Length: 68
Image 1 (cartoon, helix red, strand yellow):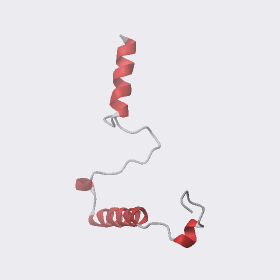
Image 2 (image 1 turned 180 degrees about the vertical axis):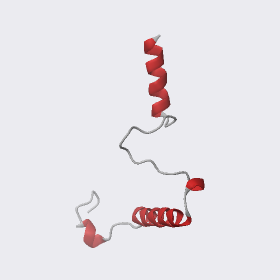
Image 3 (image 1 turned 90 degrees about the vertical axis):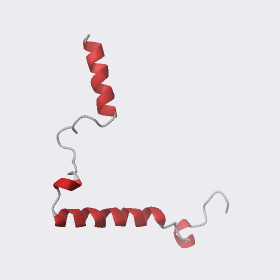
């Protein structure tokens, strides 16, 4: 029985259905955020999207790629 309980908790934690461990950063649900907090989160997400979308220029790549 304890092994089944441990396995069940492990599955729930792996699926993100249990609360985060103490000390980890937990984000608020958008419905609980103030206007300033929402704007801060939107700005952070836009910056993250820009980093993903911008490919490296040739100067930053140094020409050491597989096809150079």
